[in-house]
Image (cartoon, rainbow, N blue to C red; front, side, top):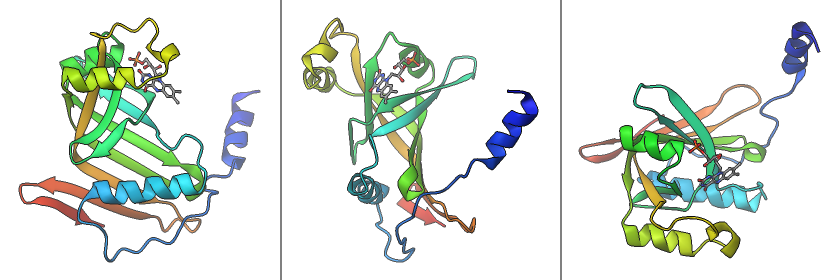
Length: 184
Ligand SMILES: Cc1cc2nc3c(=O)[nH]c(=O)nc-3n(C[C@H](O)[C@H](O)[C@H](O)COP(=O)(O)O)c2cc1C
């Protein structure tokens, strides 16, 4: 395929073809965790495949970004949790620069969520509990001392819902000293 036909092919591909649920901008929850759980439930209800898959973006010590797909392990007041090995590339990047961004894309609902914040390592007990909860084959060959659960403590959470007329809706939660502030 020559570059021109690739460009034409890409331009002809439809985007934002899902069907967005109604989204009221009044009465939004004060806490983004609550809205995230509502959107996750809606994605499950619409049978989005693997709605807990997310892109984890990190930067290395020189500021070079990196990103990969992980599964979300938990979400609550203590943050968005994910797990991997400390000796992985992401583990090295998180130890050099303990901040990250998470991106979810739920195509059938035309919804995306972005989470940014500092990253903290969970307790050794919590990391081990996560490892033990994995299937036997997923535990196989993993050094328990290497397996690590991290949490993103969000400072900004963006909820984005696309619209065919390009009048997209964006709800942004920003954390300041008084708690969460919503920007539309
Ligand atoms: C759907 C999906 C889920 C994944 N979940 C995880 C996960 O929870 N933890 C993990 O370490 N890698 C997971 N991976 C593999 C990562 O994408 C990545 O290849 C691996 O962690 C190495 O990344 P790194 O070299 O940047 O550290 C998953 C991959 C896919 C496609």
